[in-house]
Length: 226
Image 1: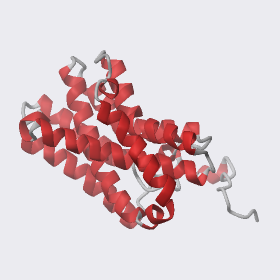
Image 2: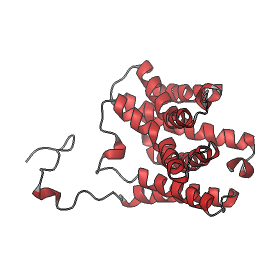
Image 3: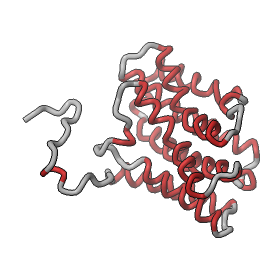
């Protein structure tokens, strides 16, 4: 469906832009973890391609797109080189990176849901794979870097929830026969806006009700104990 809205060239360029931004986040984490250049490249590749690779393997779209398009593989390496030499500058432009990351999240969750449904999955699991396409790379990145995935941490601004909303919108549009270029773009924009609002206002998911009565709050990294 997205191909009806964007020409193949524009769609490919958007995919590469999203891959590039996701790869930057992976390479930056590698710098913070004091990884060498190979470790930076691995985290960049995994962050950028992990979600789409998982989706394609689940739906049987083999070989996965990550292994059929050289640009998909090379773009994370370009991001690695950029971060390797200019990471102080990239760190200072983190706000801009977050904006592009949110745009990539919106595009990937919509494209992932659509592609999963085209390969015969039901609406619920299509939406699940749309979510996995958008956030899966970040989860793999954090696991490889020996960190609790940001997706699971209460002290991080909402990331998965905007993707869930976007993927659900696509699934509902498919169900009611309303999926078209406009509604696809609307789902992507909704995801994008929700993610930016979460960053701006520090929206976070609620934790367990009355949890203090049952367990002590986990100590955050870098926070001094009382």
